[in-house]
Length: 137
Ligand code: FES
Image (cartoon, rainbow, N blue to C red; front, side, top):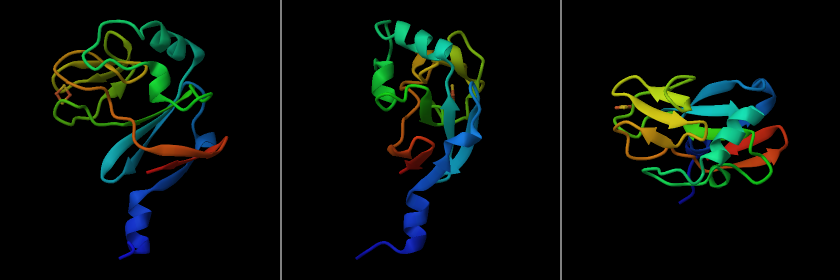
């Protein structure tokens, strides 16, 4: 059986990246969850890459969390991997996201660095349709 058009519409979404200024992020709703599309500054990327070999609960290189040649774009499910609160950007000890519910600190790659969350902020399946358009899901 083929999924209906309604189901497909829920499954994936297209997003115009020109809506996100440098150093800003937009929060979308996708499959009932917040989704962050962040346009990272060179400093955020450098910070993330510099920490690639730091000790982490859920080790992952920054390059494995973005698409090749598109390191400025970070797409994340905006749901804390502890108990699902929505972290805010710009807080915490690592310059990335901070979850106020129980104090999880994520870095500028969305990797968990401190606090009770067990895993990095999840990167959903997505692809670039052009330089300015992504399809998520
Ligand atoms: S839900 Fe984020 S730290 Fe608990």
